[in-house]
Each structure stands twice: as structure tokens, then as C-alpha cells.
Length: 306
Ligand SMILES: [Ca+2]
Ligand SMILES: [Ca+2]
Image (cartoon, rainbow, N blue to C red; front, side, top):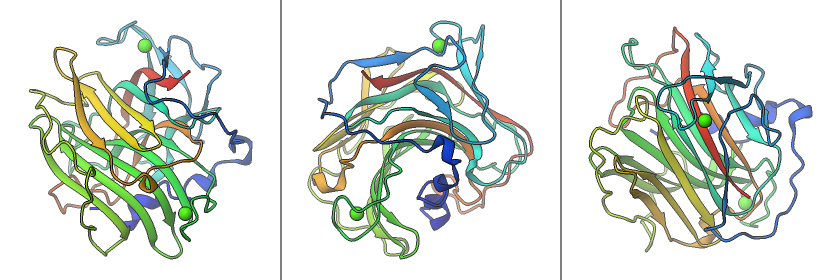
């Protein structure tokens, strides 16, 4: 389920294809408390100055009179029919500045592939990411700093979360811990730290698999409802959460494991919609198909540190 093709969507090779005009200059930011005040971008204008598209296929267009939004307006991210596989064949944006720690997230309705044949592989994601593929943490593996939410259109009750620190495409060495939760039932489907593809999970360390279950959210469907997804990133903890039908906070993952398994480098915040050719729904071995029609995610708002 975590095949190499999955990581290549983002692990260096994919985002290295971004044109040089879009390559960011990462500026060190002072450390922020995880509870720092959040800036809300409501997407009530076409292109906030903090944001730029990051693939050739992206046009940042605000839709109006969108049901379910707070302000009637949302960014429409439409993945065209028959896209190339990988994030650079998708649509997405990134911040123009980098952040180190803070609260990030989005209120969004993810791509909906209800009624499309053969479970098309379409991912909607919201994540921090650093293009500084150095070895700042000094563990001998190329750094890959990323904290992500990802949702498959064909399994919209399930949320995938991953904390990355390292990934080397050439050596197949990586460091990432993932958790997969069925948000509707509260069942934790998967919680796994890996150091190489094909090697299996490491034994979980204290604080890496909390909470054991999450509070169920009846009727949760990421592709049918606007939902808020946030994470609080700090040096020694990452807390992922959403909100239930009464707008109460529901923690999906409270990572308090070793801090060397948490990114410690300034990162951009990104959101995208893209086609994965090999990321199957959890519990399925069916190879996802290339979508034959357009798929759209709607972003009501994006949350960033101040
Ligand atoms: Ca490293
Ligand atoms: Ca909005």
C-alpha cells in the first residue's frame, strides 16, 4: 500500500520538475508555538499574494455561490480527465513563504469520484513540504520534510496522515510514519514507521500510536461535505485533527514519538489534486485507474501560521 510509486509523487523527483521560476527561497523563520494564531485565507479573491500555482496545469480560480462554504466562495481545483500520473500532472498550489512549526490546514471538500468506474486513483492532499533535500538532520539519508493529509476519492471515509523526515529515491532509504483512520467509524487501520520499502513496519515506540481509536463521526464523507483538517506542528509533537458534526474537535493522531522523526526544517504549505496509478484504497489490492472525467476539489479556506 505504500509502494515506491507513491513516494515518488513528492519525493524529490516529482517536485524537482517544478520550473525554476517557482523554486522557492527558503527563509528561516523563528520557531513558533503550535498554538500560534492562524491566518485564514477564505479564497474570496482569485490569487492571494501568499499563494502561487505549482504545476503547469493549475489555474487558481475562485468559484462563487458554492453551497456549504462559509462565505459562498471557494477555490476550485479541477484535475482534468486523463491526467498524467503523479503530482506534477495534477493541479495544486503552494505558499510563497516557508514556515517552521505552527498550525496548518484547510476547510475543503475533496475530489468526488462517486459513480466513476473502477475506483479511479485521485488524491486530494494538504501538506507541508520542504524542497531543501539536504541532510540537515545528519542521518545519512536525503531529507524529505513533509507532514500531510491525503484522501483518496474512492474511499472518502478514510484519512491518510504521514510524517516524513527522509527519502532517498536512489537508495530506497526513507523515514516516515503513517497513520490511516476510518474517520466515520473511528477505527485506526494502520500505524507504521518505515525505513525502506518492502522492509515492513518498525516496532511502534511510545507516543507513536495515539489515540488507539478516534471518536467516530457518523456519516463522515470527505468528498460530500466541507470538512476542516488541521495539524499543529511543533518540534516534539504533531497533532492532526478534524471536527465532528457539532463542530467539536476530533483528534485523529497525536504523535508524540521521538522528535527526530518530526520535520525540523522550514517548509511550504501546499494543497493539490492528482492522479496516482498505484495507490489503492486501504484493504484493496485493485490497481486504481486513470480517471476518464475531470475531478474537482473545493477549498473553502486555507489555514496558515501568521
Ligand atoms: Ca537526512
Ligand atoms: Ca471561502
